[in-house]
Amino acid sequence: RRDVGILAMDIYFPPACVLQEELESHDGASKGKYTIGLGQDCMAFCSEVEDVISMSLTVVTSLLKKYKIDPKLIGRLEVGSETVIDKSKSIKTWLMQIFEECGNTDIEGVDSSNACYGGTAALLNCVNWVESNSWDGRYGLVVCTDSAVYAEGPARPTGGAAAIAMLIGPNAPISFESKYKASHMAHVYDFYKPDLASEYPVVDGKLSQTCYLMALDSCYRQFCNKYEKLAGEQFSVSDADYFVFHSPYNKLVQKSFARLYYNDFMRNCSYVDNEAKEKLQPFSNLTVEESYQSRDLEKASQQVAKHLYDIKVGPSTLLPKQIGNMYTASLYAALASVVYDKHGSLDGQRIVMFSYGSGLTSTMFSLKLNNGQHPFSLSNIASALNVTEKLQSRHMVSSSISSIHKLRRKTVTCLKLAPSKMFHWNAKIARYLLHYLIFTGEEPYL
Ligand code: ACO
Image (tube, rainbow, N blue to C red):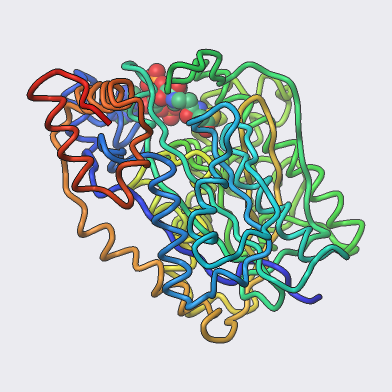
């Protein structure tokens, strides 16, 4: 099987969002803290009648329709999510409603979860299935769906929500260079969800940033080693056209690319010019531990990497900056941003991806692009994604999202229903029930 990878993509994100600028003043944060400090423009969130299941039902229905895929042709369905709706029943089983209707119940796969990494685990499973002897000739389908909400405090502006669907098969326009792949897995408590009744994680923000950068270093080191063994030449940032990172918030993406540049400087890569060498020289004797704590190194490496960041990373930042952290969907929304923006010039190019999930699990892998053939062409993927129109048709909500989060929790608890059960197929009934609840304060009979 040749060129196994992503044949088609679609994204759904909630139409409701809040401007980070407004959130700053609402939260009493200093001006520029969320927009410049974190690098975010806007944050999407699920309203009281949406959740990860309704979003994933919507995006799967939309992908099948836009690319005219018969649901009977799906042989494996994998979901990545860290938003727990039920401790046992997988989100995948909810999505089976779409396939049962067409008489297709012969679909392998369940949910994968480990923080923001579950989508990558799901994707690698599907790609491996298509490449294996178990493949039965049908498509794989990967769904990444999450609603990222944080308790009030510094992490709240790093929320977001979205669902992405990706169709997997051979002869794909976005294919895996399976040999170039490196992982770093470890046991840490940087971000976790010990309270199963709460949507909110417990998060050690500073530790999670350091863990992310350490995992990035480790993956990059091993990725370079493997590349060098197989290709017989040094790998550096100049060997990929784009770098796409898991994006909790944009500032961390800026720091990550700068970190790769610093790695390349320490490895004596030839593209690092004299001016950059001069600026980074003072940091060349730091221990690895010291290098994670040095703010001066962070600033200097961001500065020398800026021109390359704009070219190789900038195009991937559109959706993550506009939507916020989408957990499992974040990395793939960043990939979708590149495909949407650059689809006309990606033929023959390489994209290096970095996936990170707290706890922690991480993988760096490489994708090769070709124009593809309709309907599985880069240009068709770009038009199905329809990013500009989707972004323009959103509505800005006042920044008191606390009350919306509270209303969501109240709805779910009082109606004893996941919003998705109401929303996707029965939006009108859902609204009726909600209004009944709000006006009477009573639980309606169901
Ligand atoms: N104007 C411009 N910049 C500002 C301003 C201002 N008025 N005020 C602060 N800043 C800058 C700071 O200098 C800092 O930038 P720097 O890192 O380049 O120096 C940045 O804004 C953030 O401010 P801090 O005070 O350092 O951090 P804060 O306490 O606001 O917390 C954090 C940020 C830790 C990211 C928090 O939002 C969080 O915990 N988020 C969730 C965890 C997370 O996303 N971790 C990432 C990996 S794990 C995952 O994906 C979930």
